[in-house]
Length: 284
Image (cartoon, rainbow, N blue to C red; front, side):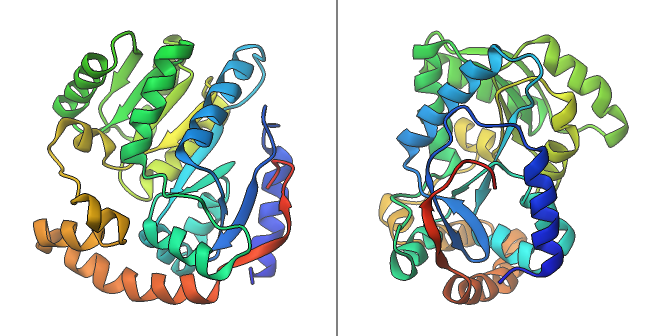
């Protein structure tokens, strides 16, 4: 289903990606994006193994972990440049419940559960305390970033947040910022910038960054602080969290959902399928 240009680009990108430490998991294509079939717990375990392995290899580059949802699926279909950027990810996980539903309906190896980044950051924090992984928080306003760091440290005693930086910087400042990040020796860099900026930043700066994982996380820090509120559990489970968010922020989100939701549904129904081999070798 992918265009020849996308196939060629993906093959070249795969050749340049770092070899993963734990490299076997199933993948399916959901809405046109190759998506990992992982539980949140399995994703957290993979983070630990990869990050601890990266500490032993000073030449390794961080693995890029991106989140797939209706917005990303629709943007990847409409914007070839965004798709090329998104396909640089080593792991694409199902941030949206609709992706899980589509995989259950149309594939042989469905995604076991949604791994919303707003939930996963808490899973990651728990195992980071147990294993000594170090976090760097990048994004949001200075106030939100500082408050998110405070709450995470308070909620998970012993969590090492070795550095943080707000998201208001220019591309010209990225070299200096990457140096600042590297000096803190993080294992996981959480990148909470706007879409598509957070993906572009992660791809552009992967060669400069020293870490195990770079994880895009959208507005995650604002959810940690409580500035953004999650939908009730039943709305999350039925894939209606977008409706809750629309009701709370209609001016900001109406046109986004009006444009992306119909296209995302079409793509989920027409570009979701199993691969010939469920177990993959880690290169994409």
